[in-house]
Image 1: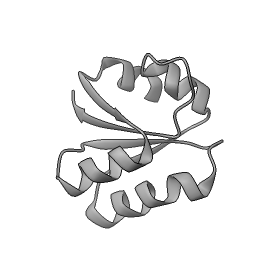
Image 2: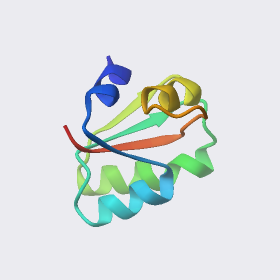
Image 3: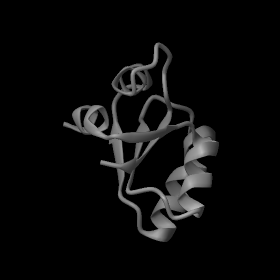
Image 4: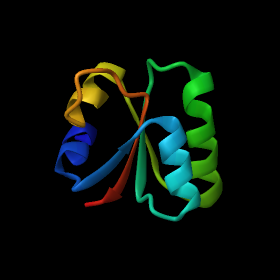
Length: 83
């Protein structure tokens, strides 16, 4: 279900730094975080999202998260900015 939502989104942001920047700018609707990613990579995005009330969804795999975004490498954090 979560991967499908990412595939259907018209705009996504891939990566922790970019997702955090977009959250601070008020552009993010939802955040997806891979459970197999290192916590030092994902924690800044998770903490900020919870702080400002953006839903955080946990998914199993960085590889599958990257694939859902249409890239050939893993993604630890993906933010949806438009559906």
